[in-house]
Length: 415
Ligand SMILES: Nc1ncnc2c1ncn2[C@@H]1O[C@H](COP(=O)(O)OP(=O)(O)OP(=O)(O)O)[C@@H](O)[C@H]1O
Ligand SMILES: [Mg+2]
View 1 (cartoon, rainbow, N blue to C red):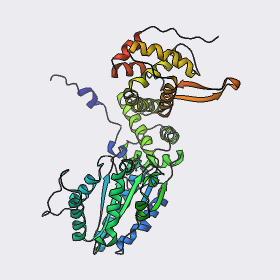
View 2 (view 1 turned 45 degrees about the horizontal axis):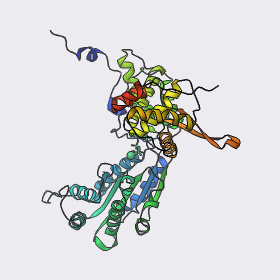
View 3 (view 1 turned 60 degrees about the vertical axis):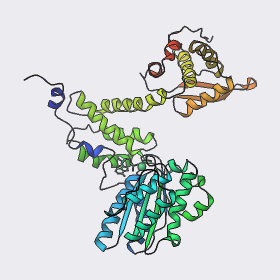
View 4 (view 1 turned 180 degrees about the vertical axis):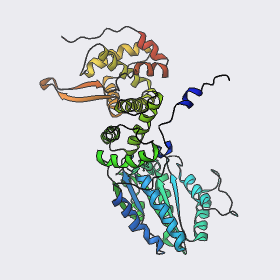
């Protein structure tokens, strides 16, 4: 039989028992270290089972702190308890990063509440009032309590009026617009200051219960990983040090459980690719590198040309043996790079602000230090993963950078 490109990989015995258990879409049935947050939701949402409107809620926390997982977990139990007790309770979860206008959020809610006889609300085209009226009428017709989860709501609120208007409309439902039905809004966001962005009228109407999700520490992340590893990975495959290392690395990254799971899953994948039967710390290191590469590559690809020229100027000086590079040294190289790119150089003040932008993006560090009577100066260094070729990434995403990178530069040397 002719050989097939996939034969080699298929014949390798997989180290996973169920890879999905380590994926983002998996809904675990136990969430260690989120007991308090779960209780806050349960204590409020129990009102729905008593036939009353629960308060609105805002959940905050860093990425990967379990906000979405906890909300789904609680809503699932709420709906099933509602069904068992004969209460009409329904949770509708919408991600505002994907569904990002007031119209679309309302249309989505309306369509999820639709009966077979109901007309589908189109993605666009109806007057806003008509969409809202359909949502209201469907809530009323179904009765009971409608829990509307607006995940990543900061995306919508950052768009100005869209977020305000949506929340204003949804919170108006409980003020006389519904008869025999209630609506409760749970907003989830990364940004603690997000309610400050809201119109004060909306803020006072929302009057939510706030729940803050703290980041996980390393030992908590170990507890998050162990049950998922037991379910997802075959027994005896992980070296003892693997889970603690994944947890420690992710704890440094703001205690992000998603990062910890990614590290573990990719470590196992790496071991499989290397055709070994045990996962060790070297695979975790490889996974960490891969994640850093995957994170930084699009950031650098998408930098505007002027920012690429500034980054190039830092890198060229570093490759020339300089560390703690000053703004003046960067600017001198940047002017030459602009000439090679056929670009007009920006003022050094603008370049300083581009340097701050690169610092905020986590590509370089730029520390301000005092030089006594010579005023303030920056000490600039790149902070890219080892072996990451930023020049190659810039050249492949912006052809003119080939001219810039290929040219010769007169660089300063320090005595
Ligand atoms: N306590 C926990 N136990 C088990 N898995 C968890 C726990 N907390 C988070 N996770 C898992 O970590 C991943 C990220 O969690 P989740 O999506 O809930 O984070 P989030 O706070 O909503 O993040 P973001 O702000 O980026 O949306 C998910 O796969 C989730 O199942
Ligand atoms: Mg989330």
